[in-house]
View 1 (cartoon, rainbow, N blue to C red):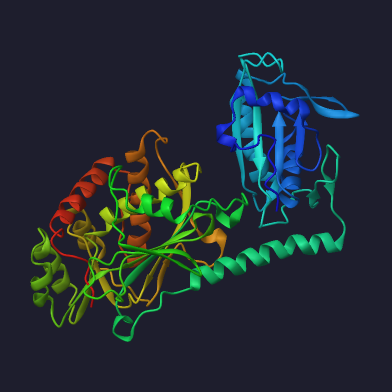
View 2: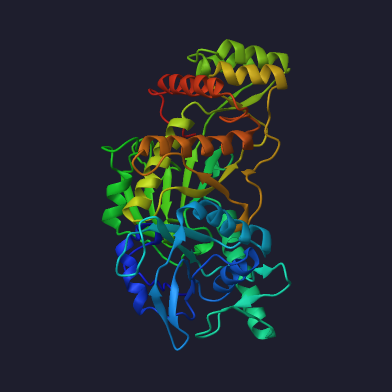
Length: 463
């Protein structure tokens, strides 16, 4: 894999107008292609797929090369402001409409002026970074598989069987790695073996597309995980190395150090997973639940729904701490990404719940109970519940965050809402986004914050 960039030490979102000067020394070839204008969508798709299928690279629109014998950038005539929005749409649609599967790439618009490269202030250069793709080969709608070849400025159709086999092997390898990660369950003691837990997988660089480890030191990880000065956080008293990465554990809530408790594993590329034991209560009949759930405002209504459904012996998963935990998790994960100088506009997630067979989820919320009254009492029917389903990289849910890096609270709340949604759906509940009503979403959020306050004196249940 290649980490090549014409802009040493900078990621694509950090590129400035002055950085374009360096293109006058960068030749077209394996990693770079210049286009003065925006060609057809089919042609754009050929270039994107060729980089994705080969070593990754950079595609520039609005840049004119010097000459075929000296194919560095001579100037940047740029793309006119009036044409920019349609041009960006053209690039994105080219990959979606002409390539299967669609490769990962990122776009940065760099506006003038830059007098050195003759870029005026009303024109821009469109920079496209295409990652070497582990999901290769990306097949063009023409039926061809394109690759970059040496110093050629145009992609070439690949016909060599050996090269094609190598491309297919990339996908097989990455699928095997994700399958192994997804299926790797926490090891627990015999008495913990039937107790429900959440395993949350987080990945900001799906498939290792950018080929950057973003590894942080032990001190940096410890600093971020235990930073309580910049938003919600979860304390971790122990952090240690392991074969899967750095393992942080919350031990203050445990009656013994070796118990299964809140655990955060930070792997390579900031591929993270969280283990969270879920508060679970058992009762031979619904009325007995008052011992553990009687403190909640809407318990009587929940009890009525239990009786209406003719529930007998029951296992109740109390989710009333969960949203606040996920807010802290999202905030912490975004801080890890920021510490590694990685964009925080989105990440990917999967929620896996173990030992949840025949459990009934409970949230102390009038909104939730109104839905139960309408649709019936949910019951998890499988021991493992996974959302989204699937065991490869393509099965992860893309969490797109609102706001920007200056609006941290908006970002981590948005991320937490989506993570909460995944867990709710896994357990049979409609979550934060059951409908398009902002009023209902606001009411549900307020109710869940209030319900969390009623749990604050109750630590995570450790059976």
